[in-house]
Image (cartoon, rainbow, N blue to C red; front, side):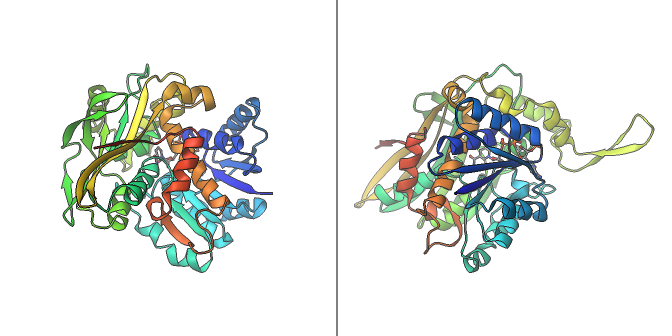
Length: 403
Ligand code: NDP
């Protein structure tokens, strides 16, 4: 019986579990484990109520290699889907290595105490994974994930040479809260408030946080102010798309979102180092400001059903084909309400969770990670066609505008 083990039962985890359960012909047994068992149970109940069958629930602390190893040994899954937080990437990868099990995640490793994220530690597993004859798929969400596949697809079908890539991420959804993040608040606010960075002519150029603002036109949405951020897929795409001269990443934010974030930053609420606070009993306790903020903000999963509007995420690519200059926008549009109707989630969770499930499909069918491709991979290193065909079937359609 083909078993998959999913770790993480938050906003994205809900989508992944439902999509796995929708595809029982392949994923015969689905095990959902997370730190809080009741969250797994709520997702399993929702899937069952939708006629998607049983999901087995387990409690696990994925910061512990031993606990994850024990869970893998109990169920012997074909692949472990890490849908927890980037902090757990290395422990889950280590547990997969010890048990010779394939691995997949949606975000690269981030050290909880350092405001940076990079692939170095995960890429360092490559040789050990090759030796163990297992496969790791890094960043199988939308961005990173589908955006990497879009670049590989454009390279394969539309360009001889790619010069410039601008990855564009627009969430034009609106919700009734004064301020909320659309995925894990701690990870989201760390990412947005960090210094910007992009790659040009062989060098990385740093900017102040949100220093570069441009207006981009998003199909089905319209023009939106977009801000340059550093995003993890830039690191792997610079390595794997040959001849690239420039790559940047832009994300849209409303003035309301930015005003809230700046105020919170100004008063120290985005801090990631612990501070001492006097407690009621006269003692002194330690708290990390951003973790307090995370507790106070709406759970991103609770935006589901209350968010209307669309997302548009894609890659604007400039290069040449047959010696002629060419520009192309390859993208997906996703509707928040339609996601809610299908799996009870908002579009950011949906656009991340569906590619994670499709990545698992590629692994379980042996399309990716087969005999000749063991080790640690980013998505642009693999054949994009079967992935995008399946993504389309599973609810996320690829559109291309050529100029
Ligand atoms: P949530 O905070 O909603 O969910 C995280 C889940 O992980 C929770 O169920 C949480 O448990 C669980 N978890 C946290 N720590 C542990 C642990 N030590 N052991 C076991 N379980 C743990 O996050 P999201 O669902 O919004 O995001 C999930 C992942 O998706 C993140 O890594 C995020 O960065 C990534 N992401 C990727 C995107 C992409 O396009 N590539 C876009 C959006 C998100 P508990 O409930 O107990 O806290």
